[in-house]
Image 1 (cartoon, rainbow, N blue to C red):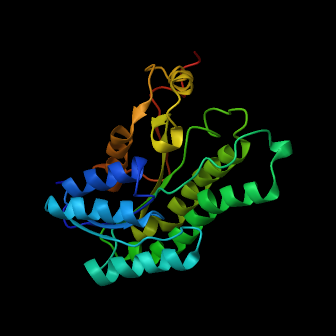
Image 2: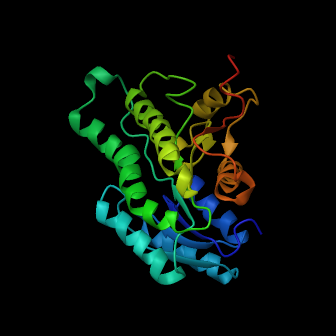
Image 3: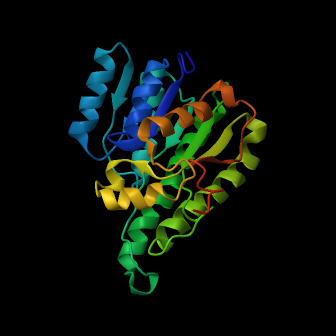
Amino acid sequence: MELEQKTVLITGASSGIGEASARLFAREGARLVLSARRRARLDALVDEIISDGGEAVALSGDVTEPDHADELVALAQSRFGGLDVAFNNAGTLGELGPLDVMSDQAWRMLMQTNLDAAFYGARAQIPALKHAAAGSLIFTSSFVGHTMGLPGMAAYGASKSALVGLTQCLAAELGADGVRVNALMPGGTRTEMAGTDPVSHQRIAGMHALGRMASAEEIARAALFLASPASSFVTGTGFLVDGGNSIFKG
């Protein structure tokens, strides 16, 4: 198993890529510390993992609160003795629309969720990851703002592009400590965040060379690669899992 006896922290674990990753990582032997705001869904996921023979514990909370990041690391250390992998996955699309009519509040909320939370998480996780045999720190970024700009998504693109810069600088800082840092960059993915409008899904699918959107499970498999020893010489990357979006011009 790729993550046997590894302790993995996942934020945004109650749905989408985070939930799919939690299930996959559990099957690969990980001991999981899971975070999300929706406590009932998070607890149900933990119960499911445990009933299937896995190990998991949950702590619901808001990733925009620095104390929550500290509490998650403390839980990993007290329950499982340390932290090997941190997957900072929680994020939001925020308010879509032209930037010149976006409110200060909408901009700040998006940046707090997508960027500030990554800072809080990494700051709390790095000391523990330095003590791991081969720590892995992962952020969920996006193709938006990196390989493609989309109208109405300036704030989202800015926040996700910033995660790539954060990834590269932290990879340089932490390489000597044996900690790898990478940004997972999914293409269009069928999650709750993407909604259920078939017209929108068709439009998004058309942006990809494969002509479809990804499943959350497909993105989770890429996250597993970055979390596992299989990617032992991979650090500082914006790891595209985008169905050819970056090379397909439609």
